[in-house]
Image (tube, rainbow, N blue to C red; front, side, top):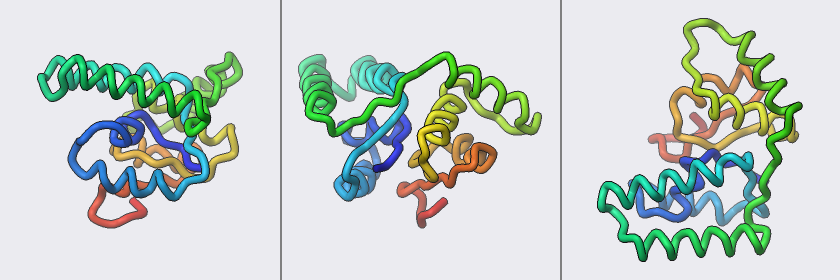
Length: 149
């Protein structure tokens, strides 16, 4: 099982640069996992593509439908956002070095992966890549010139 952040989830459905690398990785996984909030992040990414005229409304609808089918068939395992997860994320953020830049949802992803027994997370977000070690995770980026990152 692999943990993908929202950017990697988007690359499974959108023709973004080097998305083929993420898809190839996804095909090797028995299951793909992420925090439930990644569903909303993914929808936001698709909507952004529509606003930027990189997708039509019809194409976005087809992507949403495929995404929902994959969720219903169990391809995606959604890990719940609980009060315990939020509390653990807040506690971890208090311990981070001041110079480390990490957005709220990225910290939530890292905590979610760590608390659900993952040892690595797949992302191309540079701040998550730098912060993963503080969450006892190894960050991997198949979009970099070489992996692991």
